[in-house]
Length: 271
Length: 181
Image 1 (tube, rainbow over the protein chains, first blue to last red):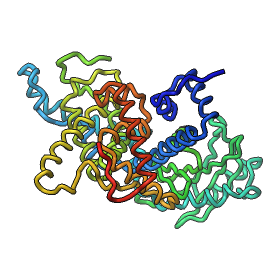
Image 2: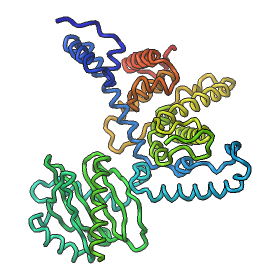
Image 3: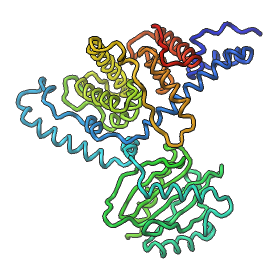
Image 4: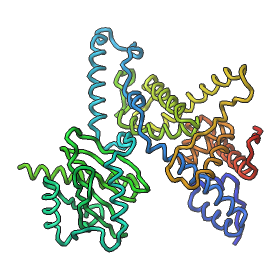
């Protein structure tokens, strides 16, 4: 068994995960026999990870308004030279309609990651939600006051305490089961907390409260507090916060499920 | 669905464009090392994208296309800045920005990271771009070659030189150290 000489290009491709499996096996073998090379590869990988880690933070920053505006087609007549003359008069109107549609589309596009990333500084609600999640999810024995085997009683109790109908969404489709729930003190109004857990014992919490009267609806927003990711949104004067230590895309996926079920439950309740 | 040539249809898919902004901002930050300059670069890139929207082939990779535009805008700006700066100061090298690190609360390894950033900031723009497209953007070497309009072999050699230089800088950090290109 002998190894072919490993080229410098192979090493870099290996570090960046761009080497075909067959060649990567050769590098694996070379690394096993060459401690200095192994150390060098480890160092490059660490640097890659450090750079990614540092700059990934930019992805979480809110997108400045002027950049969102720059993503909308410019209402400029510069590029209309090829148009027949008769269409020119219609253009400003067409651009107006297009711009309105686009803006409306952007605002209404609740689920786009990009808009979620406009989130900005976490609100008090998101922060409170993150703290409550960190506090109770870490509690192995008593994360909730009422366990899921008494779900009806739990929902009834929280509905009574919050003063409006609450629902505990079924997150089985994304691998999370209801653990139970509890009441959490909020700034003004009490907050209901539903705790979920997956097969790996990772926990999520969904918190619900009545919003202050003047708050309108908001799109999904994302905040990251002390290692806890929170998606929060306001719908029909209720604030919702889904918190967990899972990565953002996973959390967003679950937030969609939650949102869909709450909308469905509301529609069913309104009949 | 291809846009008919010469059509005045907006041409660029807005949702994809908006969705690309965070990645553009990240790469711009990587390039310029500074938040406000980075966002200016993103804005210029988007504006240029709209100007060149007929060049966009529907269905191809919008992000790679925007990265290519950003690279060109950046290179042009760099050339302008260098020309303007040439008469002013020999110390102010726009290619070596003082990098501002995105801030993470309770970032324990901040000092080490800051050092790494400074070292990356000392690389030549050519090497820095290749390194960061590979390391941060995790693009394939062929994609990087396309964005920078250089052969894949050049991507490889720049990447190799970037990492070797970085290694030397890490081994012997110092404010006065410069990489000889």
